[in-house]
Image (cartoon, rainbow, N blue to C red):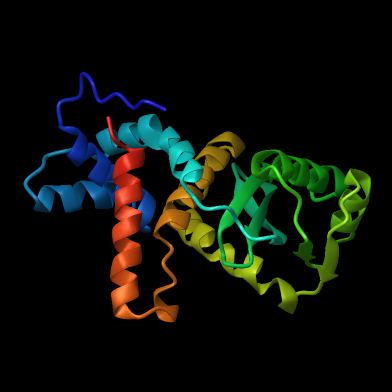
Length: 228
């Protein structure tokens, strides 16, 4: 995807940095405005919001540059409050914490589970060898309907990888004072997941030297994906 920065007052590096700050850290638009002001850039929070909305689709390019995920998929769902109504955020991650996909849906049933799994299979292009879920029976029913041969393990502790992947979403939900609509939640969380995947270096598991290399690769991927 070609990104155009035409007819913008500020150069691409400034726009890219503002969008990166908002998506990478748990910040509000006003927080980003203050951080840019400290660097002598008088940019309003509304301008930052418009940049995030316009340039968010480069997340697709970030996803295209990710390595192939593992064959062990963890699926889980969490409730989110949107406009005073309860929705379910269904999420799939591999056993290394890579967010494979997510889907905001109204229900928590077999139909919703089937929709998530079909989207996963279409996007990834292959089926997993192992599915790990909680004890919600909708997962087993969806697996049977799709004819998946993957081994299926169930249990709360076995699915800690998926449970932990909800934590960044909870932090953003609080910072944003909840999501405004299912569509906006889906769009933002998809972009946020792509950035999270790129910069998730598992720093507690690596040496300082390896961390520097991984971080450098992440920034190279970011610059390539957001290039004009």
